[in-house]
Length: 352
Image (cartoon, rainbow, N blue to C red; front, side):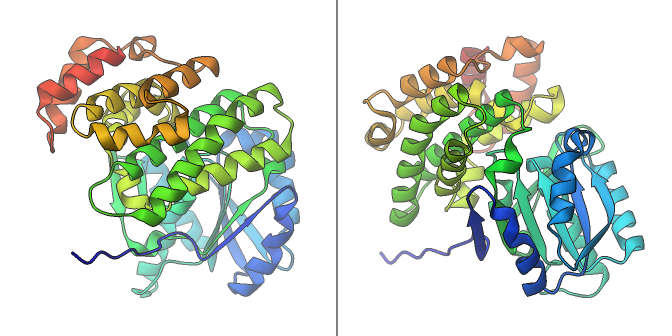
């Protein structure tokens, strides 16, 4: 049977301490002169890093800041769209975590629609400050008016350029940095276990997971080490070269179901659920799951990952977020999909 692979990451990726110097050349290459700057409240309050980004614009200008909260609320995306329209921007620059980047992606496409550009979104450059790798996906998540997680998938959401500058991540709280590192681990697991043949992404996923296992504890031990943080960023990138299946696997779907509704960050949902989902999947594809041991170090990949999460001091129990069995029954019953709700509830309860 013939197989095919389509590489679906941004065209240009820059990395390393000081990579911000590539922002002005990228803006010039993409003919971006007036950009909407999407960020989050904590970075805006910290101030210095946002000013460093503004100082790297070169001849371009950023006439407006768009501040996006966790889980990218629909109301904030709508407001940002109107603000960007009024500012007359010709490109998007996102600086922050996954919520800011996802919101920026959606606005880039909606602005393009308003201008009759059906073939692409507005040019978009991201400078990520977490390891959730929203910047690599042709999809975007947001929270709808009912408080539930929703999503948008469109090839036009793909970014033009990503700048991984570890110096700009130093204000990211360590718990957030590490939990999004587990989110990246989740990407590697779910991409590797996806249906079909994907030898290219499998190779990178295993290598990315191996690097995360080695480098996340080093990041915790030395929070200001930008070389270690760069290693974290590269590892997260490697886990996400099969973005669709990697972001649509069972752990992600179950995490999104409780995340937005109960205000649990994306990275934390992976900490809570990934080991339990992996044990569940090992019953269905034991040989495939066993191969994950090449990255985690033993035949018990789920146990290895759970031990890593514990050693990093990250959350491990859903109950810590005030959720009990009734809420989990509701979440399992509403999911549907490829697995019976009773099996999904079993996984939730094991993580409780």
